[in-house]
Image (tube, rainbow, N blue to C red):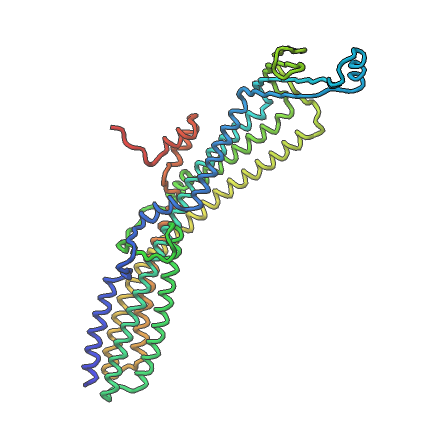
Length: 476
């Protein structure tokens, strides 16, 4: 068989392989794999994720703390009861003086019941500040629950795209193995025909072993990526998935300034940090309550006698009026509490500024990555075409005896590298897009500006959430 015939067949086979590659990126699906779209993955994670469960618990805790703070200002009824036996020398002498039966004990029983109702009117700003503080804490918890959901959405999107990328890289590695295998068959046939040197066969075998190792590593990376996604969405880590690889590149029309402006208004953790400052301000007001008196209404009734609840009361009285408590000197306790609260306020202000800076940095990094990968996609696509053309040309020159086997080997490696670069740039673009959405605070359940507006209008937490909901049904 002539050398030209051997490699003309090889060239046609390679061209067919590359065409198949273009149609099969990401199609490494098993017939037993579970079909799963990105949106389905996100919905599963929002239902099953532990971070979201904990954020919901934090929100429930904040709601109950606010309820407790409010109810403290309402009426409170207390009952205090005592039961005593009173004896001693007096009762012994009394029994002997009256010649009482010795079986009668030388003591008496005494019972007292004290029932009081208190209604705080003014606590010097203590409880009033605690109510405000708890309310701001509830607002912050509402927003941090939304932030947790947005974070989980990004994590799932990143893992989903990562799995798609690993699927595509497995395909690239598998096609490289197939291509070199066909090449080895061709050069082996040529060697048997006496038109190709044995060193070319050995060189191709080494190249095949290298591609096989790359494929093994790619398969392991794909399994790890699948396990990571399964873990995020609550599936067994070994469950096979058939992920949707129909994503198409689309230019994201937004400027850096627009992204930053949107993030400042919509990031829930940014708004939560501002509520944390308000909460700390309220705590300062509560701490200052030690300088002021507290006033409340007190109504009570006292019953005492030798039986607990009968009518033989030796004392039966009631009382009602105002109760005023003031400590003009508390040995500096209030002053120390105020200083501590102000330090906490300074920290909250610093943390809010830090959160703003973090948001700006996240938006900037995500936006830069998005535009970088966008340019990389175009460059890598051109590189793939160039590498393919160089590969085909290298084969022809090898057939003609102009170039060595190393030229063909290097050209084939360049094709694999160019295709790898394109896959990486494409899915890195998707990941950067997801990161930018998260950095900007793209809503899932609530629109942060609408929630903040509802709070400023005096709406309760539940009403503000309803007004800001992304899922309100349209009224007919």
